[in-house]
Each structure stands twice: as C-alpha cells, then as structure tokens.
Image (cartoon, rainbow, N blue to C red; front, side, top):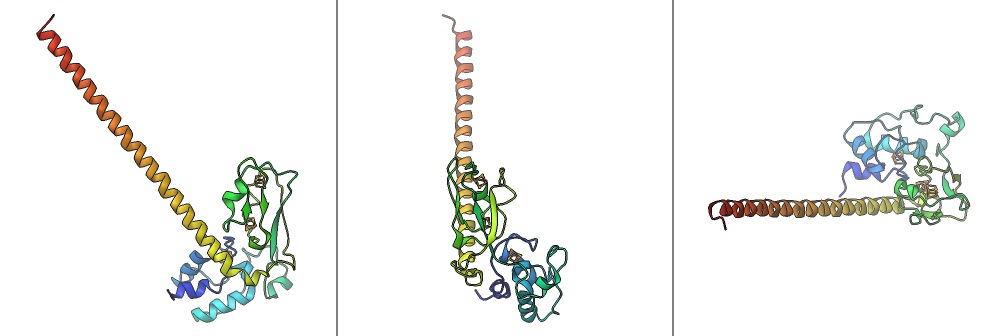
Length: 214
Ligand code: SF4
Ligand code: SF4
Ligand code: SF4
C-alpha cells in the first residue's frame, strides 16, 4: 500500500536501531506521516535522509537533532551519512552462549542457541548496536563494515524484510504462548469444576449416610 508512511519508510536506512526514539523505522515513518515528530531524528540516515524526508513532507530541512548525534563532529554531520556503517563481531573465546544478543537483534543477524557459541551473519548485521547492552560479558565489538560485504545502502530492503519477518515470528510465538495459557486455564477450570462435583458427591454421600445409617 502506497501510503505517506510507506513512502517515508522507503527513505529510511532500515537499521532498526531505534536511535530516533521509535521502535524501528516504520514506526518513525508513521509518526512523521502523522506530523508527530521531526525529520532530523535518524542518525544512520544523515543529512541526505533529512533532506529526502523534508522534500516529501514539504517541511523545512532541519539540522540534525544534537541530542541524537551527541558525539558526531561537525564534519561528520555535514557528511552524507552521519554514522559510518559498522557490523558486530562476537569474541568466540569469551561468549558464554547466553542468547541475550539473539533476543535483542532486530534483524535476526545472530545465529546461536542457548549454551552454544553465537556468531553474527556479517552481511545481515545492520550495525544497530542493540546487542551490545544485553551482553553480560561485553564480548561484542562493532567494526567498520568490510568492503567485501554488500554496502549498507544496498541492504535497506533486506533489513526491512528481516525485521518484518522477525516481528511476524514474535507475534506468532506470542499468540501460541497465549493459546497455551488459555488451554491451561481451561484445563484448570475443568479440574476445578470436577473438584466441585466431587465435593458435591461427597456431601450427597455423607447426607445419605446420615439419613440411612448402616
Ligand atoms: S535507522 Fe534507526 S534512527 Fe533511523 S529511522 Fe530507522 S530506527 Fe530510527
Ligand atoms: S548483530 Fe547486533 S549490531 Fe548487528 S543487527 Fe544484530 S543487534 Fe544490531
Ligand atoms: S549476549 Fe554475549 S555472551 Fe551472550 S550469547 Fe550473545 S555474545 Fe555470547
């Protein structure tokens, strides 16, 4: 569907990093379309994205929000992209396989299972850095995106679809957890109902015993 929000979303870099303060690129685009936020909140997009968003919205080109680009020198702010693309690398000798980074990654770029070694699929890593804070042993490092990888600019569609697939999977998992909860509750209620029947049967038997003693 070609809504204003989807057109704005198409201009965003799709790292899904949440630096804009929204839960990913599409929610930011939706807020922009609703006139609820400003065009200067996407550091990975840099000045080019601010200009592109402003053009579609017909609003003034704002300077980058300094609160969101706190460490960037002026030269970087003037560059096409304020943040250079990076990828995460896991130090395999230190990783304890806790799975926390997998739960945090918005584009499912980390492979691993609980208690096993984890690794980053470098091409798919958007450089969002969301896996860094949860890692209990600080064994994830951000490094420049290697020239051998597909350039970040060419990855937006892939990151968007990975993020969508992840959200859909999480929604399915939530729904199946809710269904399991509903089933358990139904079984509990059935057991309780059975318990009441038993109690009533015991009461009836006792009352029969009172009126017809053996
Ligand atoms: S790339 Fe990050 S900061 Fe930019 S819109 Fe997407 S989630 Fe927000
Ligand atoms: S591996 Fe880390 S930096 Fe890369 S996309 Fe996933 S959470 Fe973001
Ligand atoms: S959060 Fe850190 S320690 Fe845990 S699995 Fe990921 S990289 Fe390994």
